[in-house]
Image (cartoon, rainbow, N blue to C red; front, side, top):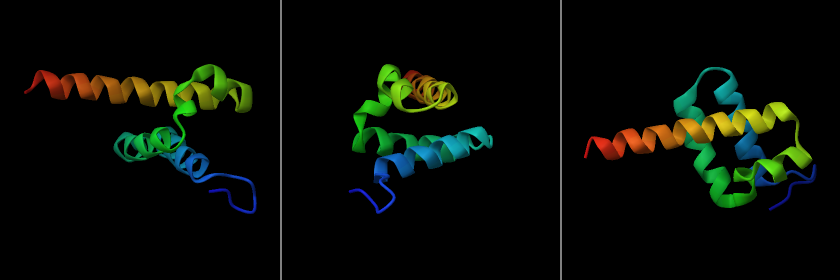
Length: 79
């Protein structure tokens, strides 16, 4: 859904994820990352994101995705 300002729920969720990540709250950031990617999978595409947002946003999302993947692999290794 789109609000009056033109932002979607996925944009607000990703903005929150980025804010948490940049304020050194990785657990909170990653808990917002997954819903944002489910709502709008394009966030996982650096080319798409880079066409619409600043390089810092692209970099931040990439860092969060790398950390999420690292945690998934670490969790799988402990099973």
